[in-house]
Amino acid sequence: MESVLGARLGLDTAALSPGAVKRAVARRCLALGLDGPARYLGQLLRDASEWTALVEEVVVPETWLFRDVGPFEELAAHLRSGHGHGPGRPFRVLSLPCASGEEAWSIAAVLSEAGLSPLQATVDAVDVSPRLVETARRGVYGRSAFRGPAAGQPLERLGALLPGDGGLEVAPALRPYVRFLVGNALEYQAGPPLPCYDVIFCRNLLIYLTTEARRRVTFLADSMLRPGGLMVLGHAEAFSSFFPSYAPVDRPRAFAARKPGGESGRARQGGMARVPAAAAPPRPRPLVPAAPAAPAAPAAPAGKDLLAEARRFAGAGERASVERLCAAALEEDPASLAAHLLLAETALAAGDDARAVSALGKVLYLDPRNESALLRLALLTDRAGDPEAAARLRNRARRAAGAAPSAKAGR
Image 1 (cartoon, rainbow, N blue to C red):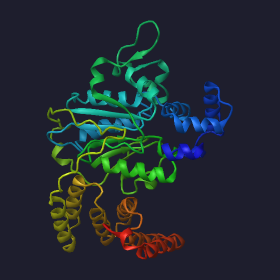
Image 2: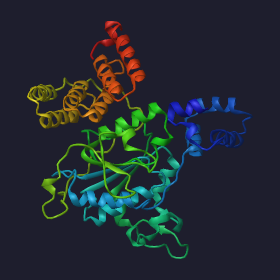
Image 3: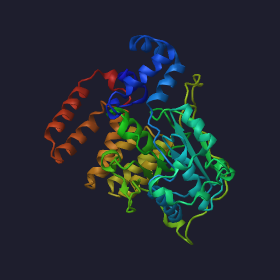
Image 4: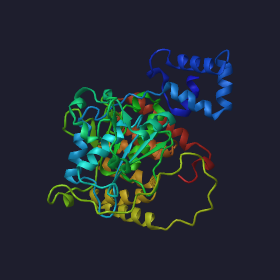
């Protein structure tokens, strides 16, 4: 059962409490009248709705309003500074996973307090649990939704207290900011063009994932976050492990870091930048398999032109121009191996090992047999003092070099 959860959710069941999966399966067997895990596995593989029921049993929905406070203070500061703002487009935030919605509504409250309308700022909130997403959409919580440092936050930020039962209901004015979606973090991708989010909250997810699932989620999150954007993780999730090129913020308990690149100076005049009213952003892509699309028209050569110009700047040692052009090329095609490799080479030339490792990791995620990336990463690993890991990478590179031509086509 653990392998099924790992493959479907990327869940590292060893990170759960001891026996959590066994107890969840036992509860489902009892509910269905089945006499053991073997029969339940057959039911699980036959019935998609039973998969949803098992997910409901094992997900960890630990959240509350303005949890830790620091991330929301940093979001407000990020808005005031103008980081990531661009004319003619809304400010977009992703909450993944959103659990029962407290985080998403807290983000919406910060956006509203900053003076942005629902046309100027939106929140996409995604969770794998349909039950939790339905709770989030209702937006009705008890007083226990305020805990710890967040307990000092004014209740009126989220709406009026419901009379008589001590509950709290999200204010109607906040509801247009948030769109709740049922989706798996391993598969979620926002609508094009990418990157599209100014801030991503991805708290306390990575610690529950397998190594491969972490690689996938961090790659997807990085591809969706605009240069200069803000990434927020959980308190036990180190940026040095998952996003080594990001710059952690100074605010205590914010657990946030900025993605390299982006400009903020244009937005600093007069304080917080105002985003012009704009049409609502495109809805995220469907999270269920779609019918095969008609063949796409041949891509325009703009990305190739951008990379050709970037290579000319690389030859002249103008790193900033290379990064700007590669970022533009990756906005058109986030899976461009050539752009990621050029960024890695530029970082290597500048002695920026952390950025080089990040770029090479993206290449190897897209093409695990990329000989050039394997050899460069081996060099960096050797330099970091891990000769055994470097030797393994060189062995992988040799095997990639000896692969059949058809396996290397299109690299």
